[in-house]
Image 1 (tube, one colour):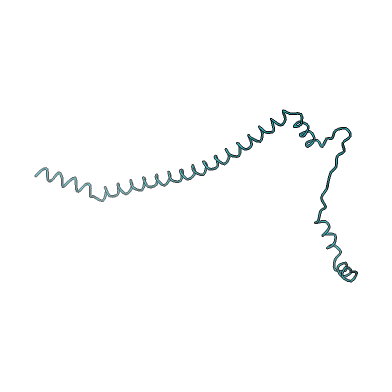
Image 2: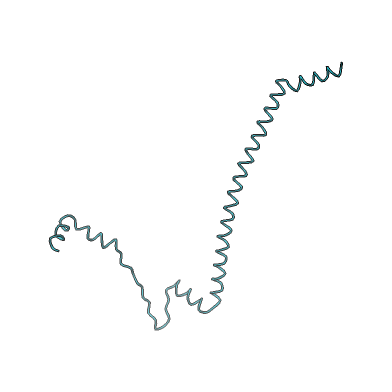
Length: 125
């Protein structure tokens, strides 16, 4: 009989409102921790993709720099860099600078005549 009463007492403690409250609090705490870990997981995934993109960019820059270093190892490469950077020419060579026609200024000059210039243009043609 004492064994039966002991079991009844344990059951009454396990199924009490206090124990239900403890289990509910534990569930909320564990759920909150899981949600926090999911947020950290997403942040880590974003940082990983950014790091992979940065790595690709740095590898491309490395190969470009290695190519430039190899080019500077030759006389032709050094000459090309000097010509581009300082707009230098050898003796007897001239430097030609080609300037593109600015189409915006040409249209602005036509439209700046105003109404009177527009009417003159129609009649004059």
